[in-house]
Length: 195
Image: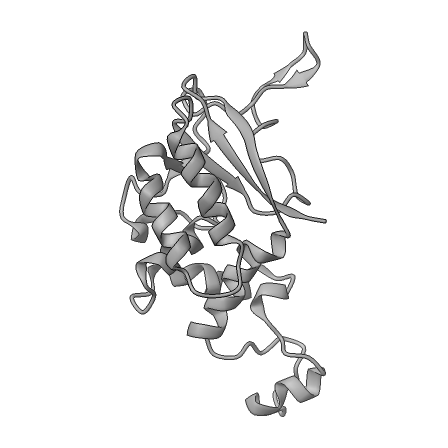
């Protein structure tokens, strides 16, 4: 079964695995689906003929289409772009931004993240994640946190560093030596990079 991976970064800047929260569909996918239902109009897939009225799309498809489950980037972008939508609560923007690639949360910002995860309404794993983050906040060795929203894709942090040919293994990503990451609370949420 898939899971959301939570990673810590130690004082040397190296990533390490902290926790796996089962089922990944209760993480990013749930956040995207909840926000889509709350803030976006019903999704009309490109294969639905123009003569089908919006109110009849679900009947035509025999299921309720969702941007969250389509295989195209552009429909998903409508969900990701909600991070800049003024209708969203701060907790919703923060939870959504945490699903973006390469996001890092500095230790001093973990209380804001934990509060946002606890405040987010809906059927998700965010409360479980908040419990893990609370323990990481107490850990003196932890300086930051990152996510891999689903274990079925490539490793984002632990095997993302330069390959060590001598030992024939990848090194962990290092916050001090690599630059593919961005900090969630460094700038305003409106300045988040594209997902």
